Structures are given as structure tokens and as C-alpha cells.
Length: 115
Length: 325
Image (cartoon, rainbow over all chains, first blue to last red; front, top):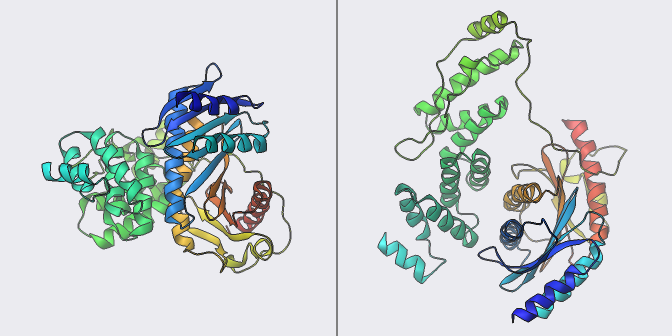
């Protein structure tokens, strides 16, 4: 199982502009597997991304939009893409000028491979 | 406590989480209480009392901003909640947002006319407004005490102030100190959003503001929402289920969370959140200093198109706010 997780994370982290990718246990917000550039804080990303995902997922369900599949946080100096992968969330942190379309595509494929 | 604890252990969705979380807080087990409360809110996101308790837990650690976020959630669901009105009133007063503070505190005073903390806050507010009208700076003797939020024995916040001074005394104090007269500190606006410039007439009816966008394409709704989750303009189309007020309210907390996430991960100012849900695509983006643009579209709408539609809507929103501010 761990090999499967590692393969999924590695696949996304190879995309140009990706600072790091990690699988996070959605309830606890703790990292399971990660591939991060040096200096990227694994624990902080896992906790913050999982919290944001859980909160927006709850909002989505309350507003009758159903289950949240993907969250994309856009900011001046980078973006975070988080994809639902069952009990896990695949979190990808990318540079501001990365090809977001490609990142999203690879992230979805990686998440599907875990289903 | 044991009974509640067993009930929560047996059924994580049990409403016993609330009395148990309260009991933990009373015993000083703040972290356990917070965790329980957050888990409870995941199951019951609109639970007024849980949001109220969460506000108090944040207040316990001096996190006034998060406490205010929670009270604002409470007020969306229960606009006459005394504790939340009082708490928000204190927050606004602390930030020198005097007219908003007055709105909240006067509503709280109507509900409980004899509450001494609200009366005291209103008195301070009156003095500050008088000083602001005369163009004086807030003198230290009308500012808050060292810990204006110290908890009372019943667990609620109390508004502790330094000894009162009249506007005349403050005026004399400022003159003696030779200080330059300044207005109270204004709210600090976030950086400008990326809006597409829009020109032309602005519709008088705020509900019709985004109708050119809504009339074609995959959009299901376009709402301009203030930071407290109240709808300022726009509407949802008939094709979309739900109440715009609920949509604004439930997204309020997520906006604060996005801001914190971007800040803590050193990503700079947040520019938007794109949510891809089972039934819809949703985009949120800051629109000016105190509003958020929310667009909802069919799930098959292209993400890139959604971002451009959002930029256009923000342009319209800015024009509208300049016109009617």
C-alpha cells in the first residue's frame, strides 16, 4: 500500500513548478507520504490544507453542492491544489507560474489510482 | 460527563459533544474541548451553541479574530444571539470600527438592557465617537484595559476598561501632549483584487447587478457577499437550489481559513478559491477591502472560464460599490 501511495505522490511531484506533493490523512491532518522541496514545511502544509479542505467540504455539503472533489487555493506567490482521495487528501503546492491545468490533471489521476 | 463521553464514543455524531465540550472547558481541558467542538461542527456546521462555545475557546487563548469569526457564524443563523452580538460589539470597538460596534452593542442592549458590560462598552463607545467627531486621537485613558476580554465566572467575556475620561479631558490631554490630531485607525484594506475594468451604467436593483453574466453561459449564481457572509448584491438563478443567504453564511468561515492558509504557507495574499464539487463549480475571490465575489456554475463549466468570469464580476462589483458606497 505504501508503494502505491509513494507512486501517486511521485507522479505529481514530477510536474514542472510543483514544490511538493503529499498525501494527508484527512481527519487528523497528518502527512502519510510526501515528496517536498527542501525548506517546505510538511507538517504545516498537511495540517492547514486538511483543515481548509474539511471546512470547505462541509460548506459545500451544507450548500447542497455535494461532496467536494477538488480545492484550488490561488495566492500571489503560489497555489495549493487539494484532491479528495477517500480517507486521504492529495495536496500539491505549486509555484505561481506553474501549469495549473497539468497539475490538476496529474493530481486527479494520482488520486484515482488510490481509489 | 461519563455518560456524555460514552455517548460520543459510541456515536461520533451524537449531540452529546456539546455538553461534554463545555464540561472539558470548565475543567480547564481546553484542547480536548476544542477538538470535540471542531469535530461536532463538522457533523453540524450550523450548530449555533457549538460556534458560540468555539468563540469562547478561542477567546480563552486571546485569538480574538477567530472568536469573531465564530460569533459572526452564530449571528448568521441566530441574528438575536446576545452573546454573539456582545462579542462582535467588543471586537469592533477594539478595532475602532465605531459605527459597527454601535450597531452590535445597541442590539445586544435591547435584548438585555441591564447587562453592565454592554452598558459600559456603550459608554466608552460614546466617548470615542465624541472624540472622533472632534478630530482627536484616542487618549490612553479611554482605551481598553490590559485584558479587556478577561473571562467572568460564568465563562463569558467581560469588557474591562481603564478609568473613564470625558471628551473634554481627552482633548486637553492631546493638547498638552502636543500630539497631532488624528482620526481613529481605519480598517486595513487587503491588496486590490485582479478585476477586469468595467464601465457603463450600474443597475439600481442590486439583485440584477450580475445579470449580464447570468443570462448566458453555465453560471448558476453570482453573489457579492460581505466579509460577514451577508449578501450585498447578485442572485442565484432558478436552476440552482438553495438560499443565497445560506451560501454566503457557510462560506464565511472558509474565507478566513483560506487567508490563514495562504499566510502560514508564505503564499502571499489569497486571490481566490476554486471548488469543484459533486454538483457545481464554485469560485470565491476578494472584491475590494471588505467583500467577496462568489460565483457558482454548472459542473461542466471550464475552470479557466470560471476564473475570467470571476474577474469580470469583480470589476462590476467594484463599480457598484464605488457608485453606492
